[in-house]
Amino acid sequence: MRITLEADYAVRIIDSLAREGKRLGAGMIAEQTGVTLRFCLKILRKLGQAGLVKSFKGVQGGYELVREPSEITLRDVIEAVDGPILIGRCLDGLACKRVDNPQVCFYHNAFADVSEMVRDKLSSITFAETRK
Image (cartoon, rainbow, N blue to C red; front, side, top):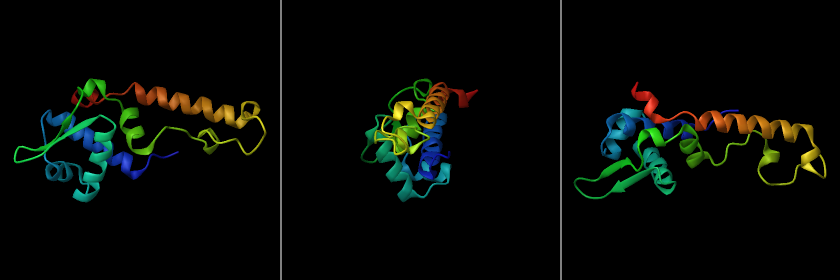
C-alpha cells in the first residue's frame, strides 16, 4: 500500500504551514515543499475543503492552518486528498466479489483489520511532533 504523490505533497504542505506558524503565500509554500505552484494550489483547495487550511485573498493573502498543528493528524491530511484509508478494494462499500457475504470472507476481514490499524496509527501522529 502506498499513499499517492498528491497525499505526500499534502503532508509536506501542512508541515510547511505548521513549521512556519503563520500565513504563507502559495508561491512560498510551493518553493518550500518542492511542489509545482499549480499542483500546490490544487492540493490547497482540497485541504481547504477538508477544513484544514483557510485561504485569504489580497495583498496580505495566503494560506494558514485552521487548527493547531497538534490537532491535525497524518490521517486527516491523507484522507483529505486520497479519501478513506482502505487497503483492499472490497472495503470501499461495494460488494465483495469473492463471496455473497463479505463479512464471512477471510481476506475482507483481514484487510478491514489492517486498514483500521493503519488509520489508528496515522490518527496518533500530529504535525506538532515535527517541531520537536
